[in-house]
Image (cartoon, rainbow, N blue to C red):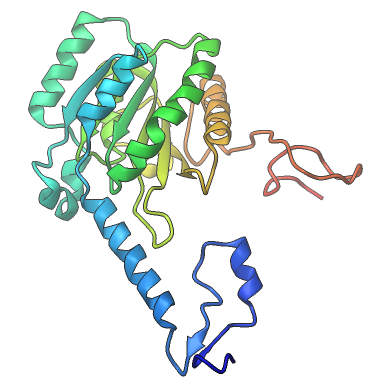
Amino acid sequence: MDKHTPSRDNPWLELRRLTPARIALGRTGTSLPTSAQLDFQFAHAQARDAVHLPFDHAGLREQLSARGQASLLLHSAASDRHSYLQRPDLGRRLHEDSAQHLREHAQANPGGIDLAIIVADGLSALAVHRHTLPFLDRLGEQVAAEGWSTAPVVLVEQGRVAVADEIGELLGAKMTVILIGERPGLSSPDSLGLYFTYNPKVGLTDAYRNCISNVRLEGLSYGMAAHRLLYLMREACRRQLSGVNLKDEAQIQTLESDTDAPKNGNFLLNTP
């Protein structure tokens, strides 16, 4: 203990280099040090702000347009943020005006598409603002290489995951992927989630979706997320399904130097 302060360091302090989790915070008597308590309050405020941050869809559409990407702006049945947070069911369906707008777009562009990409604010518009464009840059290259047809990027204000089912059904899409802000954590207010569905239609449960979560600079990289999503899309087209019956077995490069160890694969699925 430093003679100038009553604070004691936790002997596990070295572990903090390995994780953003709140471990080895030290103590002052029986309480947390002031710095740790202030850091907790700051992180909690960031999480709350992320939930209530308005979706800057105008700015996102402008940036998409600058990249030559068309977009459509829709709204869920939740009229405002208050309704959205208290009525999750309203965020899962489109407002009737938006549904009609999408029907008119589909009628003007008949024939259906292979992939519909949806972006919704979810519970963290901050995540969408930070990570949507870098991720779409990676994904777009690979989708183009596959030759899949796409619709304009659909932006949904006050949207939840299942709203992608209605959008995909109205567009006649074979597949949908929705990029959505995940519920903020105390160390991750900007985590982006990807939810993929094959043959989307209203009424599907989460068992029919595949999720790739924690896409951000401190979590899953854009390149790895795009790699895993592309694997799921390829397998879904081949097997005509998604969800619990479609496992993520994407081959990934590892850092193993042992010549007897496998050089790629999903470590959760490899057998001894």
